[in-house]
Length: 374
Image (cartoon, rainbow, N blue to C red):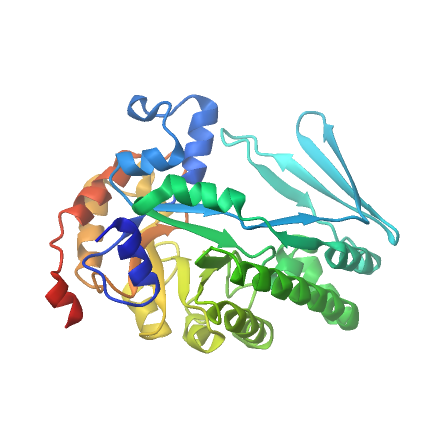
């Protein structure tokens, strides 16, 4: 059984011959490559070849869509070498964002000022959403798939988060967004509806594409999307998208890297097939066996390795080894669970720990075909 076959069987909630270890270390790679701090053994390697070098399974990301906004003019400006101001000009007015470069070694861009700063901006952002046009463009995906081969899978993403999260996290910021949602409900609901329409249109295009695994990158967290709000906004949204994708045999996956213990019991009803990046103790008050119990036997969980455990300050290598070995003794090996990160290998990680986990996983016995059918 190839790594690809194994991974896809588990994501489809079928039995494979053993567990999959699919680490996400894209951020680690980007930062260390930019800073010239990659370990010598990995110098010059592509991202996928680095996954192969540590004997893990590739979990690549790509797209099958391209977009255009014919009615919007975008202007970007670098400020003082520390900020990026982006202005979006529309017939209804303009909105802008401000990003700041992190002062640490990552030099990541963080959103400092959100697009929606007051109720008057909601109609402008709605225009931005309604002006967006998508078309199928699978070339980049097919190229990625060819490079991945049988060593893993390629995931494609929906264009926005679940609309309530898109509004609160990205458009307005959670504090301002909650006040706007409370005081200007009609305008906010109109924007959420515009997002829903665009996501459904994109999902229909993706359903007709060669992609198999489709992700909604929501960064779900029950502190910002409480169970009542999840039931009001997330469940019907996910149900609509899952119906579109399932009709074409796609696997629908949610990126849930926050605190999710009170939301996981609603996943089955929502129609998601996989919950990825499930965050566990000590980063949340949750374990993988508990998460598996909460979602039920029709949903697959991916995650289990807390990011902090990959760093020296998060514990020793021996402690991580003990944790992984104990975890693997408690979960189904070859179905319902993919071992992955919760959520990323950090830039300052002891990267040899990725190889150590690979060694543990690859030394597990594999089931025979007869055992798989039992």
